[in-house]
Length: 496
Ligand SMILES: Nc1ncnc2c1ncn2[C@@H]1O[C@H](COP(=O)(O)OP(=O)(O)OP(=O)(O)O)[C@@H](O)[C@H]1O
Ligand SMILES: [Mg+2]
Image (cartoon, rainbow, N blue to C red; front, side):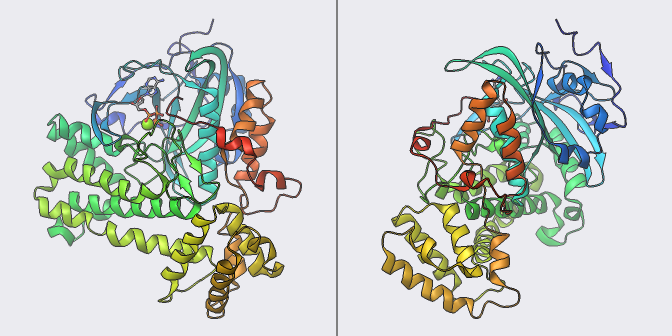
């Protein structure tokens, strides 16, 4: 039997914890220790992030670290807490939610600024509602790998330091086993935190939270002359801008989040909550990756509008601070120009175009139509197009299309545009913008099947590919190939 988490303090070397969120006061959270899991083992470790956090190597390799990141041993100086938030789920107000299976440990100072560490799957909290407070191995491996895949793709995201597992049974559709992911981000505050205090009319707390976020992450909102100098309207605009930029990157890389509820939207514009996500195989704007999303609310092509809808909820929550509805609406307005601008910029980079020209959007739109109509594999298309521009010839990319004449016509237009592409070699830009490796469902699934048998080599190998997704990685081409037929039968739902 493991000792209770709060009696064995582990003085991990060099870890100086700060607890700025805890300093907000107990209206925002409940302090409580994680619930231990029996006989933990490492499932995945991220040495690169451990170095960024300046963790002691020997300690990160130790049993003490394994126990700490499973929640079996408290780290001296950390103050584990579950925060309270609310939110809209699938477009409907869901009331109070909160960290039902996550615990914030506190924050560490790093060269890149403060980083919070959070355990996910560490036991029940006052916000667990009917849940067991646990996360299963399968979803934890997916979150671990995808966080790091997104980071390497240059997409704002929470990170993942490690996953630990235990044979403790967890009931989902069938009996599975437990795991805990240690996540890292400057802050895990969500739109839902603001909605919580607005809905419960706790306007003093709402202001404390907004001030905390502005002072730590958006200090320019204090000095802006925009919005009549209203810092809360400026905050709304800044969050809208970051959210627009993040979703533009999702769209460009073909990432489907799957459960864009307002409680899964980061106030820092980070991708958070890797649940039923998917990287597109064939390009299809209507693709629904979440098996629980029966109406397709979160289909790939709808993500930009859903993000705006979510920002509108944030605007409503901030209204008591902003004061005037017109100001809040004005702060949301730029989303409508920032998103298309960012999306076009990302797509231009995928095409190797370093500058903008008037016909670019038409070129992008006509390509996306062809990809949709011929159900072309999105990642493979871009990589092959990059190699073509690098001099490999058009055959392999042309082979992906059914309507070759239509593709040839597009390629001719593209080739003409490339002759005016501006400085630098377009292929260089393309090969570092269009990844060879993305975390396709079947790749994750293969690593999970092995991990269930206690072979964690698949997790490790995938992590190394996904952390350098633009590199060739000789010998690993199978992981960059078409998905097998069985991939389309993988059903990923909210069950995690
Ligand atoms: N097994 C569980 N036990 C307790 N609470 C849960 C469980 N699964 C989900 N929840 C809670 O249900 C709500 C919605 O869950 P959702 O799937 O969006 O989040 P999550 O995957 O648990 O976590 P996060 O958003 O922190 O990544 C949250 O309040 C979450 O904490
Ligand atoms: Mg969530």
